[in-house]
Length: 260
Ligand code: IPD
Ligand code: CA
Ligand code: CA
Image (cartoon, rainbow, N blue to C red; front, side):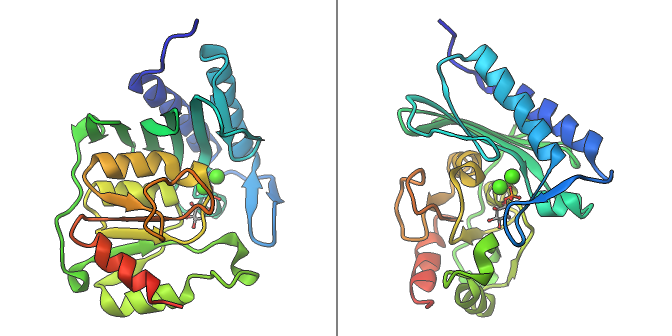
């Protein structure tokens, strides 16, 4: 029987996959469109194939949900893989993207690694033990004033079709906070809340591979992390996220609820 995964397994996988992203960076890409503005490169597939093949070799019988190949998410031992989060940045030569790997046991997020290879920043977390950036403990900020809070958000690829386009929320919180950034990687947005770089992050429509690892990292760093409806279980549809300092979470939840 395969032994249970350790955090060092996720760290190794994230660093190796990050090296694949760096090797392909700033080269011409084969770009395929999954939707009007939702793209995928051959590097997404290469990174994902590496991670998924390693997982099936080392942990046979575990369930894997990966962005490009799909898969199931009802396993006792469940992995969530985003082989390249921030793929639009990547395809445009903007150095802000990462690899995101999460492992859950019986529906509980247990281990996580998010690696930004351009900055060599490896964010990790283990349930009940804490969150780290390159091996040093990280803690979320303590801000309680919304007007002093720097926030970050994202917009869905379905922005042209959906009523949940996040414009009302973006408008409202831009007026209430210090500012709202849009960096283009949900996993890193969550890690930046963990590290105290942002005081809050929300996104209305995500997928489990976008948020699983970053959510555990932010939680273990002391952030309050729920869906935008306030649910603690993030691994059930409809997937969304609100991560914030403990003193700001309720204020952000109220502001999001009162937006159209
Ligand atoms: C996207 C990024 C982006 C977020 C989108 C995600 P991808 O993931 O995380 O920041 O706004 O909702 O789909 O396509 O780069 O893996
Ligand atoms: Ca993603
Ligand atoms: Ca992706």
